[in-house]
Image (tube, rainbow, N blue to C red; front, side, top):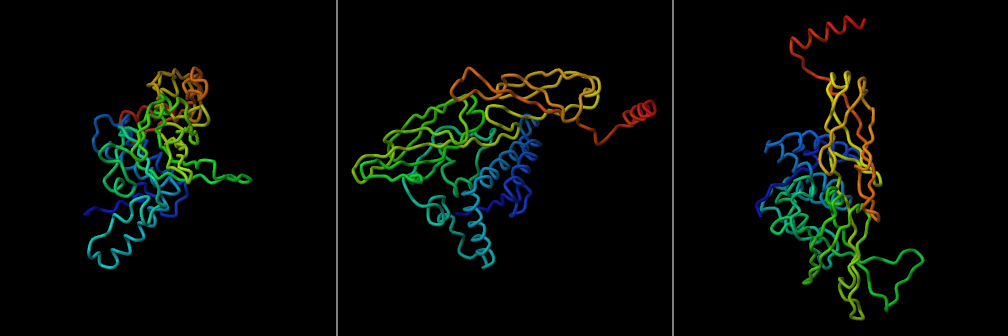
Length: 324
């Protein structure tokens, strides 16, 4: 297969030794710069946003990053050896030789094109990590759960399996239904409003059959992907809003993004950088009480202009003289 290697570290502008926090910080900064909300109608910015999201999807996941790093070393060795015969991409399919242990596949079907804020996935990602082309299903491998410390599993107990399901923050906010295929069986899975990373959904009898012929249960473990606009802590959301100097000094109205659409916030005169405003009930719905919501905290960042027109400079100089 003729395909180019994608350097995800280069995409995010970080070293291969970068920590998880450094990777997250680089992603947030780049994603905010090219987010479609800030660049409406800009196809180049949209493509860049997709590329950044894809890189973060891999490098923020410990297992996927380890697999990708192994692939990178193998690809580099192949290049140094002259690159003859074509690189064998097939052996690097996630879950195949060179990847994770084999097992029954679970596919999450349906349209995942907006999972990461509108970002689709490249052929490279689809080939290495599986399933993002065609139907849009993300393939994973069912992993058997081992008994926890102090527990043993008897032959009479069906084996339990787990598979990670990545969902977007907006999907966790609204709730949704995904179709899941395990082997030749299909299941409709309802993702509850307020789902968090670690939330588990049980599919009774959906797993492979054990020694006694009875199928085991499958637990889908939610992983809520990072949204470049928001940080989430429990049911509260945190975001930043950028205001110009006149609005910060004189007060005025600013637009604040929320997961249900932008709202207008009135800020008082003399608002400082770092000042935080609480928007009640604009956070995430509570998992077991959907009629209740957390709050949204908007922190102001005063946008200092880097370039001034001659007239603007003149006015600022006049202001500077009056304040001395």
